[in-house]
Amino acid sequence: MELLDTPISFLILFIMVLISLIGFRTPDTILLKFSLNPYSIVYHRKFYQMITHIFVHLDVVHLLFNSLTFFFFAPQLESTVSRAFFILLFFTSGIFSTIPTIIKNKHNPQYYSLGASGAIAGVIFSYILFYPTSRIYIFLFPIGIPAPIFAIIYLAYCVYASKHHSSNINHEAHFWGALWGLIFSIFYYPKVIQFYLNLFEFI
Image (tube, rainbow, N blue to C red; front, side, top):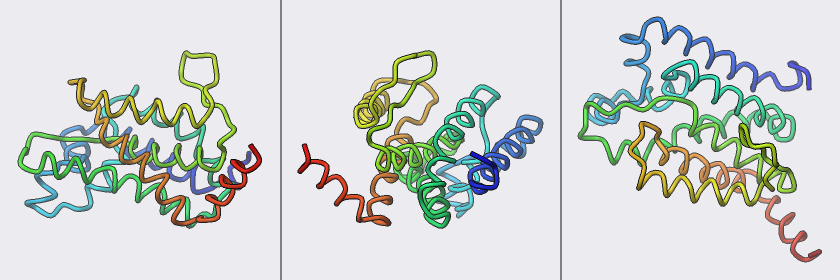
């Protein structure tokens, strides 16, 4: 797949990598200003953070993981759907995934969240909707998982991890970004439901 075939995916990826690399060099300015801080959004109306947090990452490992994941799914999805849909999907997934986090942490000025995981989760689940027979490979796990099964495992793990893990990973954002990816895709392309109904009839 050539760059010109899916320019939006590669433009988003380029901006994400560029801003993140700049942020690594100026963590006290770029990272703090662009990261999601619910307290600042609610009490100082810094709504731009609901988008800018997508383009900054904590470290190289965080950036590399998200960049590779995005690269594996985004171009293929963009080549399948309209570019307008792809742009809206990515950014609305990133925004919607932050809402529960903002509500939960609006009184905590010390809470920060950053990274494109919520937006990318929306892309992945939209991809699963359009490519239900595909197999998804997890890093260091050589066996492909059928896409629908992966979706169930992913959502279940997000719910479990958000309740039992005390890491800095925002599992709730992953869950809501993924869920929004499904909802938005069905809303934008309602005919996809008929595809699944026909599939079940065939089975």
